[in-house]
Length: 440
Image (cartoon, rainbow, N blue to C red; front, side, top):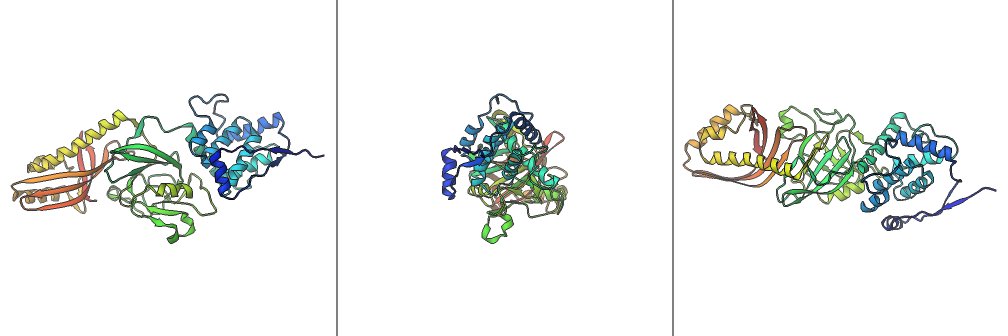
């Protein structure tokens, strides 16, 4: 007589409501008797090694939250639940892992990584497993993609955003910029920050897919994600797009002014979703865009403002203390204020000392800029310049470059105007100097 075991699925309230809302009913899963101790350890060891879990401590997890508590804090999102399953595998709790991955797939049936793990767990009930993805029937490249996805999702749990630290790039947001985004391509993460009186406050983070060929885009078709400071330029609803882009798309301002100065080419770098039959894509699978799961894109999209929201893309986010962040912000704001005062002074030499001899903007070099400013100031008896709505971002991967955008209110004895202006400042021989200046 065949033995049958009924396993009760214990779900947190939020996960149960999501399943119920989706019209799913959880039956009792019929499974074979538990694995033998030896096979259990072998299976757990294979998956642990393949997924990079073998390096985890077998006992306590130190300062980390217990995985189920972590899942509940993150509102039972699929990634948090997957982390719990991976750690169950690490602890050789394979029956429990199978139960939980079945529950996860009831909620997200298109979560291919979860399906792959389920297949391995089921295969291990009839024969020893020798490699991760043995039940998938996919190519080695496809299995490697799934392994990378598992690794970076687990890495998010093991390496929490540093408490009390701030990405060094978000030095100041103007009042109308309600949120800012920082992307870490090496960790496949997108971090969302809220503007708290000009200071960034962490809100959430999401798994993302980036360029197949890595980061630092340089030319059209190189399948790389650009690195730099960009802005959301538009919101494209899913109704106007093919299914490939999922729940919608948000184009970015690549190439920006600095990219063009460096001779970088290409276009069409977007934040966008995934097709309806897909939950997520591997970490390196786009043609250069930043890609999110559709539920994540929908949540993120509520915070994005066309023409305003900054998106800083780095290949490795650097976090600094609040003290270091404030010190750098005040130092750079001081440079901007000195430029403004020296402009008001009508002293051409003082004013032009803030510009690099390598300055260029819309075909104008330093010599042309110098001649223009001297002609313009010759007929002026008074000048007042007021700066407002200042945003200030340090460029990723470059200690000596920052970009500033502001509203410039200009009044002189013979001319008045108001405009949005953008400047790129670079450290040159120990002094900050303007390399580019133009309308924003």
